Image (cartoon, rainbow, N blue to C red; front, side, top):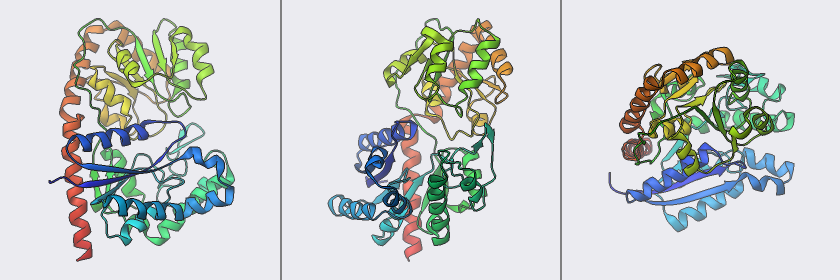
Amino acid sequence: MSPVRVLLVHNAYQQAGGEDAVVASEAAMLRRFGHEVALLTRHNDDIAAIGRLSLLRQTLWSGTTRRDFDASCCEFAPDIVHVHNTFPLISPSVYWAAGRRRLPVVQTLHNFRLLCPQAIFLRDGHICEDCLGKLPWRGVARRCYRASLAQSAALGGMLVLHRALGTWRGHVDRYIALNAFCRDKFIAGGLPADKFSIKPNFADIAELPGEGARRGGLFVGRLSQEKGLQVLVGAMERAPGLNVQVIGAGDGADLARQVFGAGFLGYRDLDSILHGMRRASYLVVPSICYESFPRTIVEAFACGLPVIASRLGSLIDIVGHERTGLLFEPGNSDDLAAKMAWADAHPERMAEMGRAARAEYERHYTAETNYQMLMEIYRHAIDDHAAARA
């Protein structure tokens, strides 16, 4: 496919996370392979300066986005628009703005926001699919978004409005799901099955894993309930001899500092994370929610690091049990402790899984492989858009 000019659209989060990193990596990848890229971004830090009524209006339909989009198109003249996150400041008005300019649109679905106000199908520490394929009134009544009735209502109103307008079905040419599990959830929620492609997250890490001795576990991520911090803490209490380092920030930082002591490293940049991954025996992913595709797993695989993860949702397919890691019963600290203790007692077996993890990375998660997949998706989107206009 000849080089295309790509306009990436993304509403950045206040606390930078995996989605923000994916957007930056994808932009760098496209430029590396000869494509011109422009970014249309808004940042959630701007919310503090916006009144509640204005924020509600922008969540439903942002005139600012339309004006910024038109200006970007006049200056950059994109061939395709690739949207990542629109909530809350960009809003779905960006799809309509692209439609007026007859531009094909691709949407990467990083979470389940279109189906669940909380975006992760979790309520009171348990999986909840009550809003899947239905109007999200339960999510509003239960204050599922930030425990706020007003904010949940604004989000629910946006979902209802754009379902009624046909935004999701008629103004996106191609959806990217990160794996088959997520694709199937979105289709069950009402998105058109014939518009889906699967493309996982990737990491551009060429350096081969070292052959030195590895020791202990590593947790990398947001220190929060949905990421399973309490499950990991419970495992440490049941097997106090476990050696685990924790990298991350969030509401659970004080608890992590208390439980892990010097093993709590707080926030670290990517280079420090990769250094830790090359020295650990396994990565722990104890999430209790549906993960889409944790970028940390791709990074771990690239570093030859096997993963001990919850037997839940997409993680079942990403982590091959006893091949590239181990799976444990979600939310079960006893089972996690047992799996971690087994890993410590079988370093040669974990090293073998680490080599398999690196091979998995080289087959599926390199920038080169991901680029080919993305170009195929762009081609489908451009062709489908042209056919719809014919």
